[in-house]
Length: 184
Ligand SMILES: Cc1cc2nc3c(=O)[nH]c(=O)nc-3n(C[C@H](O)[C@H](O)[C@H](O)COP(=O)(O)O)c2cc1C
Image (tube, rainbow, N blue to C red):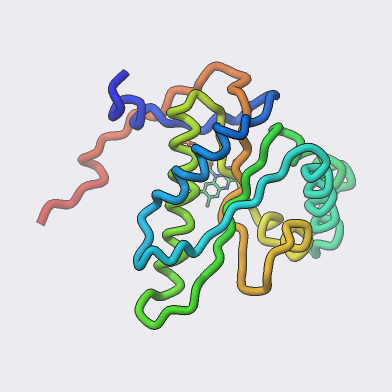
């Protein structure tokens, strides 16, 4: 498959299984993240790896958040949250870590962090790995920030669930590029 066809075939893989990423695979993904477009090359992001028991601690934090949430959440949902972090052998968290800069606003830096996450899921797909970018309100919660050891100014951009594809690769939707294009 040509590189461009491989790129155009990128899809999320909702079900992944062990084994988790090898060290060379992980390093390649991080290198891909570091090739994100990034105004001023400020690198306003960093990555946190969660494997093994770290995922259990994350699941407990997610469950604690739901417990303390003002929204009415069932006990079953709270229990299920504990297992959510165990859906993949490797979790790679992309953290927005803005830098002080007079010329480059935080909004642009946040986009760069998102680009880093996109580069990672795209690279994972090209490497035959399964990857899915997940977040939700729980990912931005104080409980999760604490487990990740985030500083006050930092925030989760992506929690990328990684592993070996466990189901047939979904077919991406066929979209008409012209429907998204305005010519002036
Ligand atoms: C910032 C961001 C957060 C996301 N959070 C979630 C999430 O919490 N749960 C989820 O099912 N999908 C989430 N997604 C979307 C999936 O990663 C995926 O892109 C979407 O299901 C479309 O599938 P595709 O990537 O195969 O086109 C998120 C995407 C982005 C960009």
